[in-house]
Length: 612
Ligand code: M6R
Image (cartoon, rainbow, N blue to C red):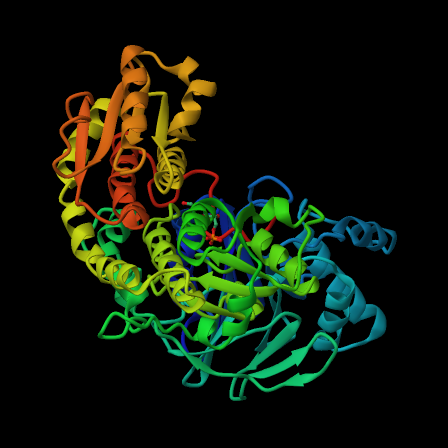
């Protein structure tokens, strides 16, 4: 979704701003803009990519040591030059960039029109800056007071940055429900919607909290006030991010780099959480709240997209190992139902970005009903991590490709650790099983490495299916969420229609779709239901569907039936998703590359979905 960068300090602002926008491109956007303060306040913006903005700026005066820039992902008003940010106030004294949605913008706009305000764009953002100007002028207040007053009136989510023509040494920024990070350098401040544009300049950052306003002035320390004028002490934290994590490092795409990082990222997800004797799993979030887990009557997992698929894997794990009933909910549905939630419920919210608006709202709802919230997030300091009572980071490092890959396997790893730790404490798994599973988990990075060796085979297979119009993915048990995830990867980045199904459900409808044009990906590694999956494969074959099968090394039955077979190393059933997902990620990747699709920034998609 939208990206924000701001700078105030001794250097020229625009190179930092443009570079920062490039670092945020992965979030998804459709237009870009910049504002700089020099002799006056200048705003330039255009539909299209950051490179289009750069081309547009070539002959413009954009010098100045204070400025802000934005990438917009359209919500209110189509993507065009006028709707792009920054937006000026009527007198052009103020300019604003904004992430989020002002929900009551229509009412405010109507009132401002009564006061003679004229609007250039269709955006909710322009309404906010006009409101700030109106309050400032009509009440004679300072800019900070006007911002506070306006933010008390608006309903919705925002991360905003404001520049004023009449104050050349100050940036004002605020957030609610949409992330904003302030970087503190040597006599300079940076601002961004995540840390990636900042890390090159400083590792000292302050994450703003909801309804906080940062006042950044040259030569002064950062000041933070709430929208109700309460002074806050800025809490400076150190970034753990490295610049190299934000580069492609020789790979053609971030997605491919991230797929190949998985042996390391899975290891990083369990590193330091398992003791040497394989008999203790230490997760602070569980240990500190062990009574909650011991007494839990139910676990509700809430998430969206790929994180929801990880949640489905978690459901099997918690039920198998900890014997706690689990429900897995789409956050977007859960938040608008009237769910029955008890104080003995544990709500696990899973999110790579930690900013997904629906998941945040689901958390708030569950919290208000007394549930205990456990967050599983990848982005440190993210909103969901901070809104949770406890949690675990997945430690997969920054995921730049819009299609989630390494975050999924890291989430599944953390869920496995949790299920094992809780099962052990509750006495629902015996000691030998616990040891066996914990030991096996630690072989997974090596087995992922071996699975990545399928890369060339998958690339070859992808050529045969580049122009397929539909795909079906089938799996059972732990492999059902893998089928869903494989289908999601393919649709997201190659724009081919794909559906994931529990293999046995095929007979109840999707079988009607099967003909010689239909590729069917079957994950056929299950031990318990192997014969049943083989029968499903026979049914597809009988209708001339083409089978791509993921099987356990040494399998001969499916090999004899499938058109293409990809062998993965043998592992425990609950850990198969960590391996079986890999060839499906590669298949989606290569098909998208063959189709010349924008793999890392697929059309219409955003990396973190911070609006509903
Ligand atoms: O950041 P989150 O994990 O909360 O994001 C949830 C979904 O938006 C995300 O998984 C989405 O489905 C990805 N594009 C999947 O590849």
